[in-house]
Image 1 (cartoon, helix red, strand yellow):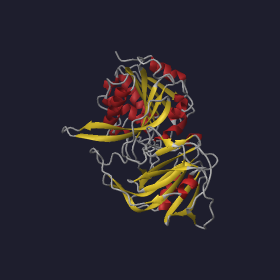
Image 2: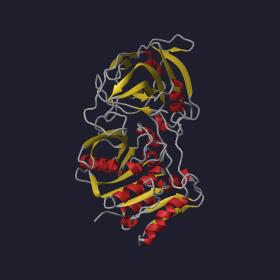
Image 3: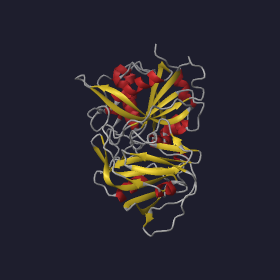
Image 4: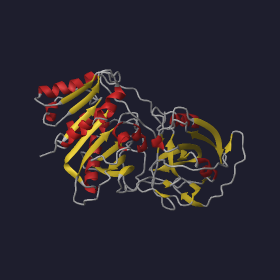
Length: 458
């Protein structure tokens, strides 16, 4: 089994749980030289490498001026086009107007390089398109696989290609070992950059703070920049367990700020917390732009909310991370101009379950909630005994009548129980919609956002 960088959408339903296919665990981390901060791919350009394909071909030497990137933790030195700069809020990512690169690492759990490459290339959300090509190469004598996108690659991936390299010795970060290096870059530059790749002995890196076991694979990225639009970020959130012991969790998320954010310094903005489905789990938040609300935000600079879209780690569920989501919200509120009386939560599929679970745990926290294609399951029960704590939380649930992944009865059970408590809960059942169509219809409906804004905490 692998732990991979890409994750995606679908739920843990009750009587019909959804089966996920895990993916490899990609892992970016901290300190770089010259100065790096990065988190996932972008833009485009041209050239080719000194990597040796299965049947070597001559490759032209790049003539463009270049700069050197050196990362002692990863044991990597490479050349990249002059003028590209570290991307604020990202781990190990540099970009310019014509392209980008980013480095990460994969813990393979015994999987071969072909399995790791196939897993990444053929992820369910098709980040490389429907028919990516995988080339067998060698980089400095090490086995490598180059993933090239097909013509129908989603525009949100910005021409991303990937190079996976079998490392001569694992990268070690916080006691976790990573067997493969992954270089993401735009398709026009990836061969040129790979041509310059040098592999050195990595320096073991310890985490500066303790972190919960098996909850995160990525070392914290730099603070997310305050800029309009939707951007990937990472933050440390502080947690305290029942015994009073403090821990640090790294949370990856997309942050959307409206185009007018900051124009009036005293203005506070309503905030939506969006929870994705099970297939988007991973450590690469850009994959969230392929579904749900983040997909819409890519085209909506005028959306009148701050939107935070966290990414759930591989093989975990939102229901077990409600305390982490609450801590992330506190951190966002402390950093940005958030109207604390107008915080909303919505989610699809697994995120629909997460929406119910989070609101149930913190019923006083949210001005309104909108679960889509979800339900409730705490590991044992399909309905909380104290469901009436949600009676006064404005709720609008959505589901597709033709959904055979999460049955409509999952939402109906929660809605009927709330009505029995005296709640004025709303429920929209789309008669012709399946699983995916339910959230496409819900998030495309302007009435949903108008309805949210009608509600505020007293």
